[in-house]
Length: 106
Image (cartoon, rainbow, N blue to C red; front, side, top):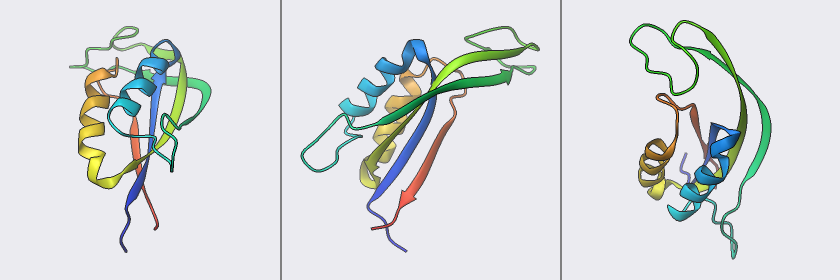
């Protein structure tokens, strides 16, 4: 099965959501027809605990943390995915960002 586009879903602290949306758009994600900066988002609570060897940017190692996060969804051409993911990982405040990529059928 072939696909041209993917959907990228990323979870980010609300304090960084505008920055992440901007990075996605500037790296050519979020183009739909004659529009750019296209995305959808919703707010929720992210939970995690840093284990031995972690370097959490929020909270303390060994302690369960809760963070107000935004789930950002956007579309991206598969051919541009590597570029977008590299920029996204570089801009994201977390040591290990939660990023999902789903192929979209043509």
